[in-house]
Image (tube, rainbow, N blue to C red):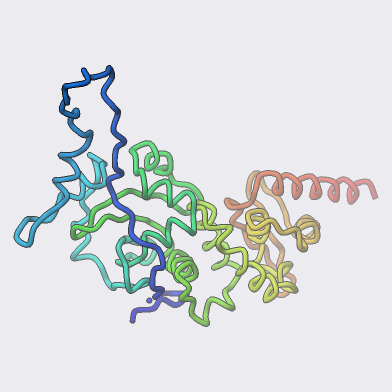
Length: 303
């Protein structure tokens, strides 16, 4: 079994039956009424050739996944075969593949997952898996909050998705939704929680992770004001928590300086400033910080 820790990152039997990749097309009855003594032949069934083409005997070749999934421009991801460093099994009865590329680590993982689990855990994933149109994939192509690429693929004859994202964060979510979390997930750091939150927000797993929010919130309840935990402003927004948000904004306004668009926090122990990465901060909370900072600066000048 392959695992990933915070520097690197296997099974739930599916209780759902696999659905056909080609929905049966309803037949439209022929118009008009046949003479009483005449039996007219029924019109050809729509989609009958397509249905028959998916049935194969012992010696028949495997069907073309591009036809089955009805995505003409589906990418063939066999190019990744020689680049995969490990295979991670999240479901023993896997019927779907996720190719996870972590460009920061410079590695690619092959993840064996359940299509049904993905569909149940995320409405976004369900819509993408069932009807993977070009529009659905193109609208999440542009880089946003650490996720720069997702596309539908076929790998070794099995349909799947290519996802470029932090490997530990994505594998953590896949473990959770397949009911296979390891003990390390109980005590993740705030920076790791932020990376998990990015993937959860992007791919619709926030609701599925709500029970884990309670666990992680309890572990960090008294540490959100510590240096290095500033992304709580983002995490709390996504997961709907207000715990210590106002206190953190006030503290940052008191101990941070602003130079143009750069916000730097003063560390009392090292007696130095550290530039903060604020790209994940929600605009409204960044605005609250700026207003609080300016108010404190005005008061200091006035007195």
